Length: 115
Length: 110
Image 1 (cartoon, each protein chain N blue to C red):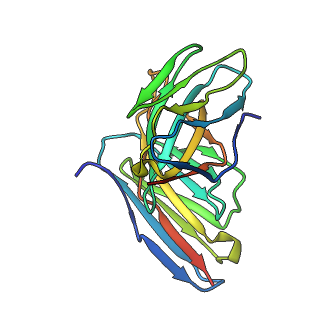
Image 2: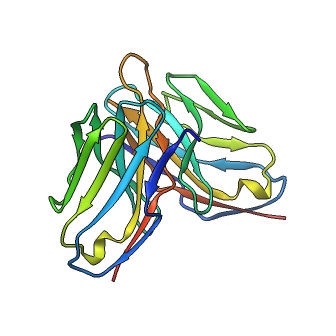
């Protein structure tokens, strides 16, 4: 199936650990995003990459580091996890350039719980 | 900065009732406007969009009109179904960045 996929779907870990979430899209898009959804459902962009280059970097602690090995992948690495990092993290992808709007397609989300 | 405000939920309706979820925005330019829907346990899906003033987006019986004069993009549906139960997000897009409202939970009872 053509889609945006994320692994793992659920991640439970202890405070202070380092963890990674992986995202892959096979839609041929050149732009990928990470969003964070908190417990109140509020959704906010964290990062965006276009052709492996960082183009959006919102005010996010530098414990969060995105890595894009190629256009189809955007992974999120989190160091020294804190309780407040507990959230659902969504990856998304889109094309870029030219059109008035390039629809973003979202992955199913990764629910991170920090104990 | 750009922002989106939508009505707080949860909104609870009986099947076949009329739905309105209010959304207003603040933006320096002329953003595109969207409604996204998140079904339980799933990611977000684009429900409808409008890219300029007076455009009407529609999909699956849902409609919203881009009103520049009132900076609004209210979501409506004439007759909701139980399967419409979800979280609905209003959003604006400017420079490839989506800014979301807080989301409105809709619960439809049979």
